[in-house]
Amino acid sequence: MKFLLSIILIFSLMSSPLLTFFVISKNVYGDGLFMEQLSASLGDRKADLLIKMNPPIVTTETIKDLGQKPTVEFKLFDSKTNQTFKEVTYFITVQKDGKTLLSDWFFNPDGDLLIEMQPRNQSKISVYGELDPILNAYAVEGSPVVASGPIFLDGGLYHFIVRIVTVDYSLFNLAR
Image 1 (spheres, rainbow, N blue to C red):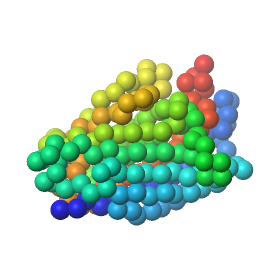
Image 2: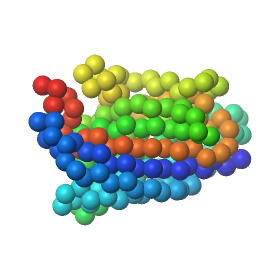
Image 3: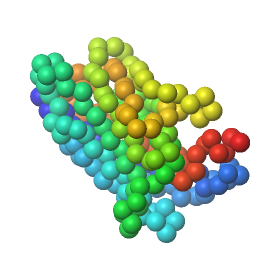
């Protein structure tokens, strides 16, 4: 049984340490099997979000028989320069059949986010990683964050809603 992903990106970015919000709000939608690259403008930069599933095909059999632990990679970069944006704060929601399985904050000073999915028979996804007390976000550096719960246990369409909250500046800097 193959799994399908539907990925939605909503840019809602903060622009300065004075908590002033600029009016760039861009919705970008995509439906991909295992990978999607979505684009939006960010001032004079072109911001692309790559969302990629590894391995590309996840089945109930490979999860149960091989102990496969699929990962989902989120990479925000300027496609004009191919440079990854730094200090990215993500708010990610995962839904299936209208039910929210995950809704949480993630931050990486290096920009990229990798979430290892561990399918478990429980009602919601639990995230394991270092929770930053100021940001109240899972701070990711180096290794993936682990999300354990009812994802990829059953075939069907999983919706990933990704909100990019900060780029080039963290909420930690805003809190100082």
